[in-house]
Length: 369
Image (cartoon, rainbow, N blue to C red; front, side, top):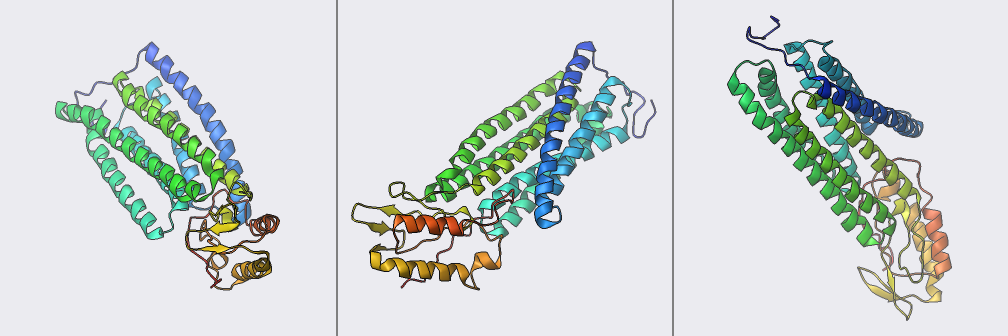
């Protein structure tokens, strides 16, 4: 063979007929998944670019992930078929594509978490911290996996058999941890504060977390089948990408919905889809997290005027920064239910075409003394 860094004793290992048939089936399913992902990516890209006149970080990462998975799936199948010979150049290219594959997907998940975390410093630290951890693991694969595939010596091969499964297990645990954190934020930051419309997102994420964990377990399991597990990598990550894109669509759909006011249901929607979690007792008293006051008809006009003043203030954080986030507004007086519904409908006409809701800057407005 005599390739770069290829020892004289190198022996090319080819899959048998059954393994090649299995690889071809996985490649075909990957193509179907890639087509559906491409169609959804085009729709989301058009929506975001029509709104901002330019792609954002989410769009860029989605298309990098999609392109890498498709490229990786094609060259892996050609390698298993025998069209591309084993070489240092091929293995180096494969690992490089895998690096982009893992880094972009994990950053897409963190980008979703950033929607619900008001402290952007925490998000920046999370991005860099997890990015560095993944980078160190990626570097170890360059140093261990490539020499093992080139059959430099038996030591590299034995270490790679163990480390390859460990690093995929680490990726799996980080993926699960981030998704569990997102589910916790949805439950504690949105649903518990009255935004019951986010319950479908909560349930959907639990189901998708289970499915994503199953994909990681399958990927670790097929490593025992030999080199055909190369073909499973782009397939698994294409499915994960499609899951992330569907979660984004679900978030956009839920944000456009309205939490209606009900004298019995106790919640109403405010700007950016947030809710003032208020409870009414039988005497018409509004129970808030800050204080309790009696709601009388004489206060209706005053409350309406002050709510309009809050929404029109020049120093309103949401007005100054439309990306500020999902806000929880706590009020201390309330008008009749019909007036509340009209107010909720008016102030809920925000920019609802965006595929992502703003992050939750949970601040209080208390202009009423």
